[in-house]
Image (cartoon, rainbow, N blue to C red; front, side, top):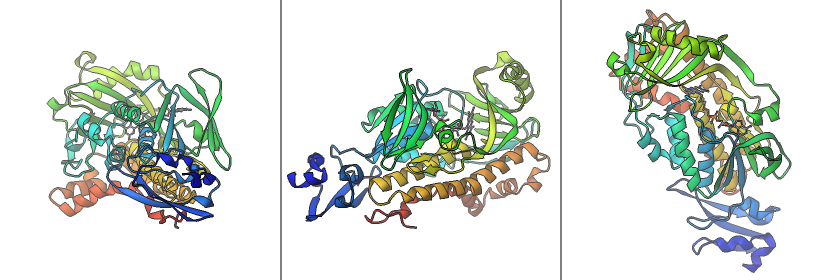
Length: 477
Ligand SMILES: Cc1cc2nc3c(=O)[nH]c(=O)nc-3n(C[C@H](O)[C@H](O)[C@H](O)COP(=O)(O)OP(=O)(O)OC[C@H]3O[C@@H](n4cnc5c(N)ncnc54)[C@H](O)[C@@H]3O)c2cc1C
């Protein structure tokens, strides 16, 4: 190994027999590296070690199944579903990840629960899909209803259950626990709860975060890149752009609740969208043991106290059977403002934003969480490309450009029209007036229309590996 020491490669001794390292000529050494990319596939990269100042930190030598040399470091801020899944995918590609979260552990607020195809894809890459499928369930029918519960139109098997990417329902607190246990088993991830990021910065060679950890003194943690997945109130975004988060906030707010109530007895399906300008709401089965999500409209000016005081009357009015409070059990209640917002940029040098930290949308259609997972897939592909020396940092410019464009041209308009459908249209005439519901009504028995409908969600994804080059270290444009 001595001959490689000049390039700082003495740690190459961690290589196993079978990985190949060869010297091309004195001033230039090429290393063939076999990387674990996804669980079953490999990629091969040729690293020009002599071209770089610090080959160890840029070549990221690793080989299948070896005790790898982990020097490419990423800090992920925010251990929500997107930060966790991004961290796991990076760690499985031999990138060392420090995942920081200001909370003490996985949150238990009632939030998103429907994991659509892009979410399924990243959970597969994260190695967590099996556990997620076992803990959750694949839902069956989704029905649009009038305020009195009368069905307007039903999408049968809306998952669709035969697809490998079938939607799975699992509340994100349970999802978080599963991802957390996978992270604990992965030596490449260090999860630091109670670690609040106060600021971010960067220089030519690294990016850093300053943190308060468990009440201690402020300190700085450095890495090659920082990914801000720290949610709607992202400190990473504020450090980059101040308070500017362009877009709008809807007048209505949504109150998300988890309740036990026998909606089955009233003929409700696994997902029910109730269309009504004043009383729009969602009723969705959350677990097989009878827990449901009811998320309903409230006036945006109401305080949390007023919402708590009013909610028994709201449930009596909205829910089938008009129950009194002793007829159901509420586990959680959480009001939530609805926004359509996007950050000015999703990448500044070595610092990137993803998911809610980058953009927000109302929850109709589940594009908030889904768009976040799609970002995490894209960002993981970009960082893995850099790590493998198959792309340079310019691929992150693509990440910024493409992900912002997908928000602008897909997530924002589709989620807005989903919300307008349930909150402004007359349920009596909606089948004639709304082209989406008219399509839903026609697609029963028409497999072509159904296929197009099911494919729509994939428009939120973008394959960044297409910008990889075969070892030149340049993102192709
Ligand atoms: C009440 C509610 C109901 C919702 N319902 C739905 C729904 O029905 N459907 C849907 O699609 N979406 C819904 N959403 C939105 C959905 O939950 C989010 O899109 C999704 O959780 C975003 O995931 P994320 O990983 O980007 O961020 P988050 O899940 O918000 O995670 C961010 C993490 O960052 C951490 N953090 C924040 N600041 C810092 C800091 N300075 N330092 C360190 N850590 C920090 C937080 O503790 C948190 O763990 C809902 C949201 C809320 C609030």
